[in-house]
Structures are given as structure tokens and as C-alpha cells.
Length: 271
Image (cartoon, rainbow, N blue to C red; front, side, top):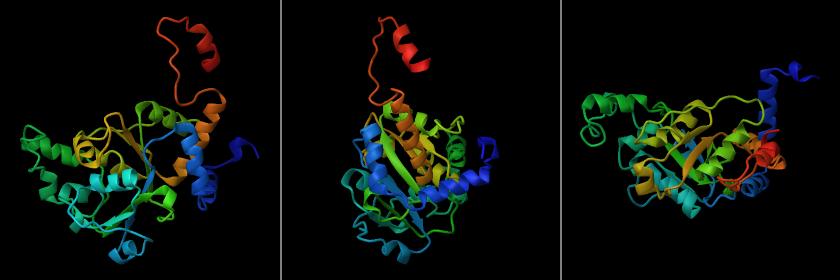
């Protein structure tokens, strides 16, 4: 069979077969080998009932009111598996992004952000309408957990914090095979809508610059970006990064020198 004989449906089916039984220990070891991440890769999964959420092995429940950013931070910085509902969240903004709170007229008005993050009520409402979110009405709960725990089996999306240098190598890995231009937006504050909100809604790899709240409450470092993507796309990215590494294109990216003759280096990387 030639490459032109393979249909999109065949490719999708093959991807699902390949990732239905992911060996997470092996995949995460390969991910760490190519990127040297310093923050735990995590998974995020929505549940239709609280009972299903509470059935996740060794799931913790919050004993205080939090932002979603804080709960995500518990998973990726403390290696906890945490399940939560809207009742555990500090406000509508956190819950609406993940489909646990209605995206109603009051929420869409942006009235609580007007004069604080945006000059006018119209500006604040435009921001709310620009956000990606999971539609309300299907889910009651969510769990975040380290991918290495294998407790979500599988997660809806995987999330990885990385430096800009690590992130561009990761994106290059996604583009190694069946290239397409990857495009994202930036809503500014509430940037969780750009990462896990968009990935949960569309299933597409989604990169964000974490916002003020994610850094203040979620422990996100100054030099970290975030990518959210399906397990299938994580496999694609790791395979692509391994292929690039064999070509000498790997992390960390060594500095060539701003005054050095560039021809030798370019000849190796682009010829």
C-alpha cells in the first residue's frame, strides 16, 4: 500500500488502535528523555456524575475552596490525584471553562471583570465571549492526576508545562509527520480557556501563555508555558521529537554564538 492509498479514516483508526493501550511508563520515560521536564505531566478528565469521579482510585477531595489553577497545581507540582465539583471552586469563571457552571447571560456579561481587567463592561463581555469552554450540562465533576499514576485510563487531555525552548521542540515534534500549521489565540486573563478549555472542547493541541491567576494561584513559573492535548497527540509529539533528535534537533538547544560564522551550523541543520 502506498502512502496515497491511506485514507484519513484509516489514519485515525490506526491512531486509536496505537493509543488504546498506551504504556504510560514507557511513553513518559521517552518524553522525559527528549524534553527533560521539571514539572509532572498530568491528565484531566471530566465525569458525568460525582459517583464516577469518586470511584477514581486514591482520589483526594478538596478540604477548602480553590481555583481550578490551584487544583491543577496540586497534580503537577505535588503529584496528587484530585477530584472536584463546582462546589469546590471559588467562582463561576473557574467552573464555566470546564463545563461545571452555566455560561449564562450573567457570566457572559463579564460584569465582575469590568473596570478591573477591562476598561468597560463591553470590553469585559467581549472577553467572556472570546473564551473557549466546555458546554454546560453534561458533567458534574473533574479529576486531575499525574499521567504516571494511570488512574484516569485514559485522560480526556494531557497537560505539560514547559519552557519556551522546550515548547517549540514539542510543537516541532507534533509537526514532524502530516504537517499542519498550528494556530492558537490568547484571551489574556483566564488563559486556561486557551489551553485546557480549548483542548477539551475541540480535541486540538492547545498552547497558552499562563495568565496572572495561573501564576499567582497555580504556582506556574515565570518561564513556563502550557500545552493541553489528547493522549493520541502526545504519542505523535514524542515520536516526532525522537525523529528530530536523531537529526540533531533536540533539547536543550545549544547556543551557536551571535558572532560565529553560521554556515557550518546551518549546513548541518537545514541542508
